[in-house]
Length: 170
Image (cartoon, rainbow, N blue to C red; front, top):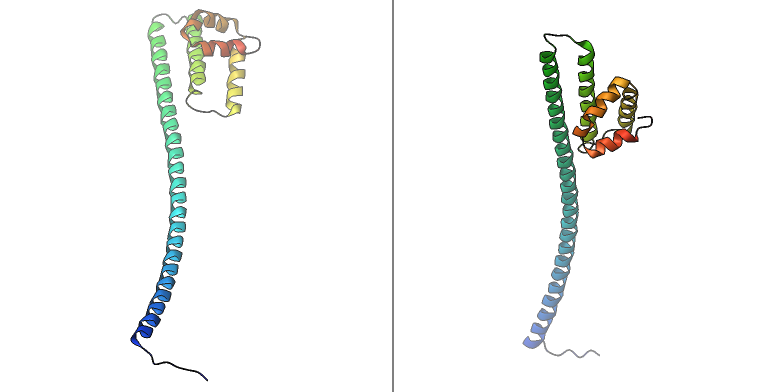
């Protein structure tokens, strides 16, 4: 029924070649699967690294804004201290309280201007903006305060001048 021919060397080489090719395809397939897994892991690592870089950039921006705000605050405090020291020297011999009060109004105006300019560096909560606007508006209702403003308003930025003039009743 079956007719078997003798096994020859050529037949054996052909069988071995077929087995080697099947093993080669098997290893190539496994290698591609491993490469695919490796690429997927690398993509995930890249995404995590990208998120970490974004977080670091946000942190750096926040730290920079914080440092700027602290520096601005220090400048504001030192300027205020210098102005108060100047007032003390000016009125040391003659305690003219009315004139001293008018000069103090100038310091208060400088404070509001500095807080206004600080908003360029640091975002303040809206409630703080509203409270400062209401406080400045109330201060401007005093005749002496408004007179001091009229004499020194040329020292301030046009943005601050517009801000003050935008307050109702000022």
